[in-house]
Amino acid sequence: MTEGYDHTITGLLRKRGEMLANLADLREQVAVLSNDLESIERVLETLGYDGDLMTKASRAPRIVLFYRGELRSFLRQSLKEHGPSTSRDLAERLVQLEGKDGRDRRMMNDIVKRIGKALRQMRDTGLVTRSSEKLRGEYVWQTDSMAKK
Image (cartoon, rainbow, N blue to C red):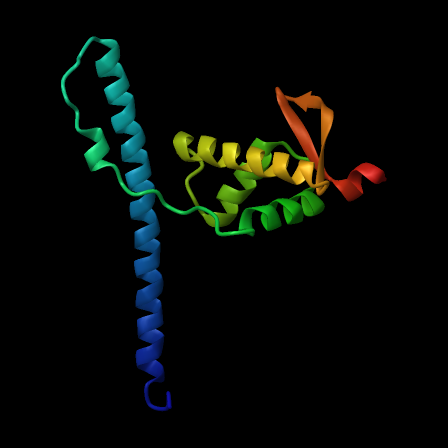
């Protein structure tokens, strides 16, 4: 059925890829601008401004970062491949893998919190363990199979 349309299909797939890349860039720009707006609003509040800033109405909808089971799978695989790691190390790996901007502090803090929560839940089910030693103030996590060695 695709006979004769190969060139068109190739062009459409290339255009689709460009559009997805643009969409990812726009999401990153929205995240950075949202951080900047919140910073300005905090400064305004600190300086005593009590007017209506209407931030809540202009907020972008929440972007789903992980689908069901996706984060846990990534964490298990990453700990097996890279060995014991902190939540921040895992977040940095995830951001790099996803091609996101690691300089977006709000996004990074959100991902670190989500990873920490997922790791605590995984610890409760026995999938990972947390060392008693801390690295830069953070716990070091490892898979249960690493701890038994």
